[in-house]
Length: 459
Ligand code: ATP
Ligand code: MG
Image (cartoon, rainbow, N blue to C red; front, side, top):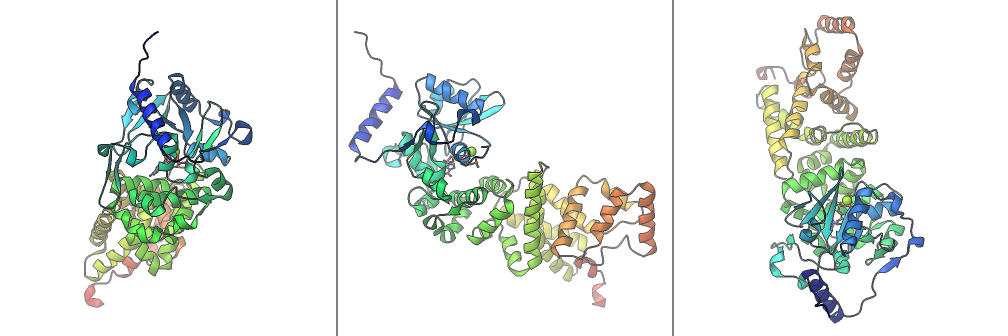
């Protein structure tokens, strides 16, 4: 008789089946057979199907999980597919040429199929089952490392929300549901798996994710899942600013920014992301209006497949605070231009303590602010030159938003609209007309910094 070769995977499977055997019997998953759900393999990207098949052919389990299954069940078009498997990242890497293992907190394999990258994650385990050094927790209960491997069931329990813990496999074409996710999709509820407080402490970003999915899917947040949000919101301070920045882009720049903002505000999370904005919108209806309009504008552009940049959004969110700070400095006698630069510096560095803003966005953001100060100055060849500034278009859009929000009176925006539409001759006429009426080199009469141009002695 040939000797049976036991490799490490078989050994792991054996160990986990012994562990399962020791555990009290559970109900097991709800399995929804292929005829009882609406997911068809035709809606799944070729790359995800290839990854699943290659894992299965090598003797591993492979499931699509997360947003892919959730969005397909809701009749939407998932933006990507994640695959969960019992192969370790190293084992899976063997199967895909050029695949890379990424991440520290969670080690994930990026498998490249054609142009698509599929994230392959190994089933996560319960921490009590794992080796100490593979999982680490901070003093706040935050998970610093979470690389304990397990089986399909433990993987489901380690996911965030029930609607994100549905597994679909082409091996049988069934959906496996360990947490009641199918029912919550029907009820349109975001429900945390396990004890919400513990799960938020493990990873405070889950608070933002709850709100993000509620806004994106137009679901309600189940009451026990929503309840701890206000109290635990300060934990967002413990998240690395770079991760928070990525999360903010997903929150505010995925097409439902305005609705997401309303949720973040309602659940007291906003003030921990954008404290300066939160303070301003409490005291100024124009600041609230500017915030809403900037987000609405971004949503509309995304829906119309137009380019959006975080620079514009950050410019809008921080502008009311910059504006207020600038005025304080002007009142102290600092001229408007340097006052604006100093205010921009201060408010930007305040924000950096909360969320990172990569330089490639903070520089254009400050240029947009700087142009607010320059757009009223249109005399001579200035107007023409301003239109050639790489940030002119964004600054002009921003000016319109400020007028629409009621921060400043309308007028200048219309002038710039006409100027852009005019031919050379008309442009020259427009500038001459300004000069005749004595305008053009001054800041707009309605801009608050413009009003303060009198020498201090005369005040
Ligand atoms: P999206 O449509 O935004 O991609 P998604 O649900 O696929 O939504 P991802 O961030 O791509 O979200 O994560 C994939 C899956 O990984 C999630 O559905 C969830 O099951 C799990 N997951 C991601 N982040 C966490 C987290 N912080 N805690 C627990 N599980 C998580
Ligand atoms: Mg996803």
